[in-house]
Structure formats: C-alpha cells, structure tokens
Image 1 (spheres, rainbow, N blue to C red):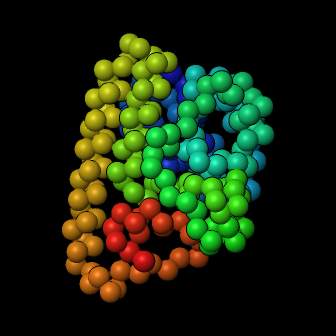
Image 2 (image 1 turned 60 degrees about the horizontal axis):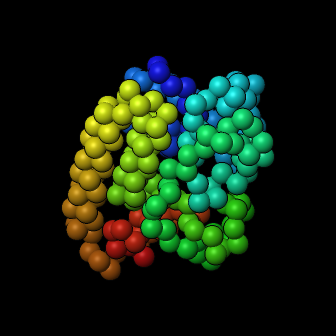
Length: 191
C-alpha cells in the first residue's frame, strides 16, 4: 500500500478501507469485539500511530478517552475527524446519564452518526479528500471509490426506508440500553 493509516474504530476503519482500496493499509485501534471504554493500546498500536500518514477518527468527542494517546503522539498533526461537516443532533438526556464518556455533559453532539447511512456518506468524502491530500497520485481512485461507496449507502438508505414502510407508524418505537440510535430514529421516523 502507498499509505499506512490508523482508524480509531472498526466502523471508521471499514469506510477507510472501502475508500482507500489497495493503496491504503489500515490499522484499527479498537476492533469490532473490543470495548472502547476499557481499551489499552498495544505496542503495535503505538508503532502504527507513529508510522501512520493519517489517523482517522469519528470525532464529535467519541474518542475522548483516546485523547491522551492521540493528542500526545506524533499523530497529533495528522488527525482527520471523519464526521466534520455532518449536521449533528444534540446528545439527549439518556447520554448525559449513562456511564459512557463521550466528552460532554449532554450538550455535546451525539457522536453515533453511523446509524444514518447518509451521514456516513460524508465520512467517505472526508476520507477521500484526506487520502488524496496525502497521496495525490491516488486521488482519482479515492474519489471514485468514495462515489461508489456513497452509492451503496444511498441504496442502503432506500432499502431501510422501504422496510420501515412495512412497520405501522404507531409501532415505530426503539428501545435500547444505551442511547445510540438517535440518528436512525430521526432519519427513519422512529421514537
């Protein structure tokens, strides 16, 4: 690969891989089966951060617990918040009362934007721009893969909308033990 990059979470890493293609090697800090609230960096994570051309993070205070690691490393000047430019919703009272530190007191933006595929399309564009700036020779490929990924996300959005139409409006209620589904609820008409 032309670039070695780090993604803070597996969700961000998946989108970076889709946009970066074979030009990018992605090291994920917090994998899909890991609890971000108890994450401890491995020596491999520290080495990957030192060597990374870019460090992709969700932003919106999601990685507040990683700030000592990200802010104090050589990654500091190479960080890309993939959620930049996304219209956010305020974190609700449930987020303020839970035991998860997303860096705020309930007034912070809700960082769980990946529950709305159209918002994730913004990630793809932000990732493509950052990769193109770091690797101009790959810019056309990054843009093409971001556009293709955006198309997949738009198709997913259409599929979700069609599926939701089969649920009577009065039954469109979500119950969860952690308030992460706000963007999904807003996008698809759930309470």
